[in-house]
Image (cartoon, rainbow, N blue to C red):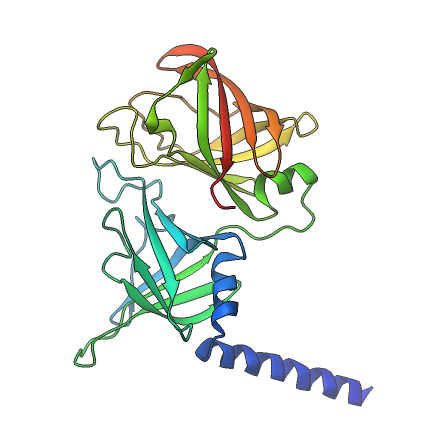
Amino acid sequence: MKRVFALILILAVSVIAFERCSDKNPDPAVTASMLHNDYAKLWVLSEIWTNGVKGDIATQKDEHLLLTKNQTGMLIFGEVDTQPGDTLTCDNFDWALSADGKNILFTDFHNNNLLFDYPEMEIYSITSDKVEFHEILASSSSRTASKFIFIPAVKSNSNASANNKLLTQGNIKIWITTGTSIDGEVQVNACRRDDFYVFGTDGTSIKVFGDLHCIPGDTANNDFIKWTFIENETRIMRTEVNPTWNHTGGQQLNIGDTMNILKLTDTEFIYEVTNRFDGVTKKAVITNVPLVK
């Protein structure tokens, strides 16, 4: 028995040592997989440190970093508007790892954001539960590098139901709108075609409004919504909607609203909603396809 315990202890120490070593000498393929979860991974900002001092992230605590296996990404701004009156809800970018897998490079920003001033950062440490990015300073700099810590916004669920896996892949899945009809009339507004949902297996979701706004000057933030399946998983009901909803028009979201699932497969998600659009009750059918294939 003592030998068994000794062997277990040796294995445990070896695993810890390997993880620590891997933090400093990462395999690029392993690092990339941890960053995007072999599809897409949604990280939420946990801590910011500047000059060795932990910062206050009260206005940034729900900002999300989305990284995909296609090496595209997005910073999804939270409910708290750090720049009141602006029309930005997200920012797209491309990303890549350095050849040695130790740094991450961000390029092709659409707008200035949290990452814009840090186009290349060191991946100081990474596990499936946390990633820590450090600012890369010039050798002449006398200050301490800023660091950003992100944690997963959603934990994977291998026991999710069949429909949950279709909707979320057992973690997250990103659905972008490709078509909308309201009361049978096809909508051709390009502004609706860059909106998308991020559905989490844990019953969370984010409705992200793209760069194009149906209402010029709309200062709406993204909608953070909790949901659950009802009626044998044929409908999705909103159980909680962020209280800072502030659209000046468009669709009003309410607790108890439901999406009637017309079609849900790996490649298509079509749902019907009856709601108030611009103050009038109407029925809409919305078609979505995966953003990442």
